[in-house]
Length: 246
Length: 290
Image 1: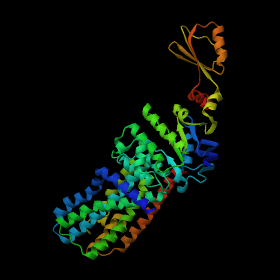
Image 2: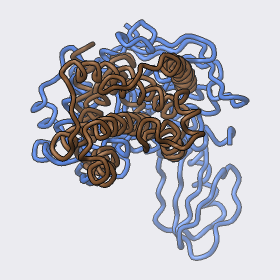
Image 3: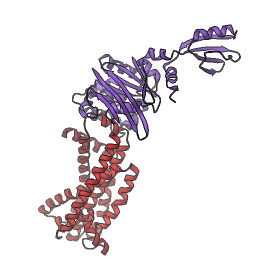
Image 4: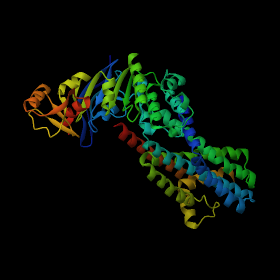
């Protein structure tokens, strides 16, 4: 089971790496935002550049998961290769697990430029404890966006899935306060941000890396979103399996 | 030992009844051709046997088990549609991917050599020709040392030489005791390979017999003559085709037709009497359902 899941992950990654635009696409936005907005404007300020880096990490986590699961799964479902793989003597488990493993690897790859740019070109600083806490926050934040991506990928045809991911990612990023410094967003954004999954994830990340008060209600909202997206993903997966296996 | 069996299987899609209380047994070692026009229920039946769908009612078994359980499919080989090969993966990688799912697969080199793919091992499948993709697709069915393979239109669109070499590979597998279920519109293929033909139409088995018997079942002969003018209406003629000055007449009684032609003093040349091809037999059998 695990060996087969690793095999699936390997081939998923191979397919992605062979079409490098997909990889560049998910790593580009956060890295470019770092270079064009964070480095020139707050790059010299250790506090702000650390927060901004945390925001961009959250941004990268959201976009890679939304797009690679949302668009990737919807495209795979449309391929005639998919029914062939379901005739092979393995259940859906290893393939599903392989996809998640590949997704984690791709997410890590899209985070590397953000962290590198922060380290090399800004005054951002982080303690070892902070980095460890940030990793925990990262894992917790990746979960709802992975589930949302799965829900999109399993419920929509490819073209609709891509558009849906595109429609979701900007309002989520802006509304969650990822484009602005903590406390610096327009008033209505400050009001809704803690209750959006992006806002909750960013607040968790800010609290991990810097002097930002832990926001319990935002974290509870993040967990609630996770539960909602898990329900949606499970519903979409079952509906899809039901339609294809029925 | 029955490797694949369908017992009173019905399958509906909404209001459409794709399979209508169909039963079919495929014993070990047989090479069965599954024939039928589009929409006859062939693909639905194959999808039930390969675990892709479940029947609305009735029982489907593969090696004595429910094909939707992964373990039942350990000795199953299926061809993917060649248009569905992952285009960015290389030939060798697609073989390895498939091998990873089976407990005791053929070695990669053996698979490649048997289907003449060794030189293509590093090519991405997206860059292969139609014939090369088809060879790879058929090869994948044999990767896991299957006891039963389902081949869907295995050689449609291949040139004569490529077709013959694929047929040879299928015959070799069958000669070693393998069981094959071949679906095809391509009737020459079924005539060339299968011992038993199952004709499906309207979700039912219309005929299930040897190639010769299915041909004999309709027992229609094709009488061809070249004439200067039109051939007059004659009794017992069920079909007529005109090909330049050549007229092909279909009849259940060729002897009587030839006697009638002579008796009516029709000035014909190049008389030829042939048994109908399986295609003609098949069109006659399914004609009533269309």
